[in-house]
Length: 113
Length: 115
Image (spheres, rainbow over the protein chains, first blue to last red):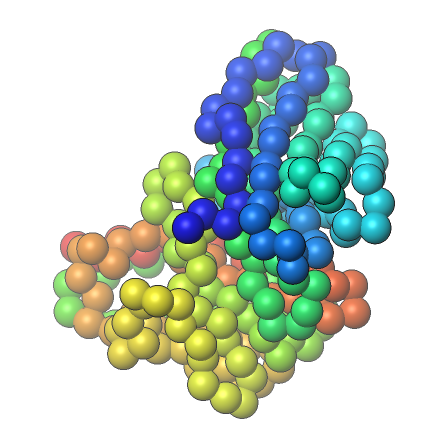
């Protein structure tokens, strides 16, 4: 049973465009939703995270939108740049010490110049 | 700079040998660390949760005698792949949760190639 579903699997966006990646979760006990960026051969790096008490969080060009009733959250990358080309993973977990993150399958983003 | 250090970054070994991977939290004490495995173009799959001073908790399907985990201090967890075989070749990534910031940080990963 896949607890965190991520789409699309791959995405091609023109430079300057908006990249949108969506995730849906099943476990209503999840209350921490981070997004990670991973470049080839590197470990994932935290981009931005949200908790269910807010519906949106923005940091620079990155925004998370969160819909608790629909159990969905999405990442928006504004003004996408070639340097944003990477694999993006959404994740979810309970906000407790010792609780592992459950990852989506990832989205490979290519930003064309 | 990195807050979770993983070493080595790459290792090539012969079939049948054992390989140890270290994961250190640099800026905080981590009572819990996590070990993930990632195949090419796939997501991170949780292998085990490493608990300081106690036994690790392994995910279903992960052989605990194959993947030995030791979490001897609040800043160090090690994963030993025993009697490695080519099918163990993968990218292994550790992570640690900063309890104060409540953020999970990842190491840079270890590329294991078993010949």
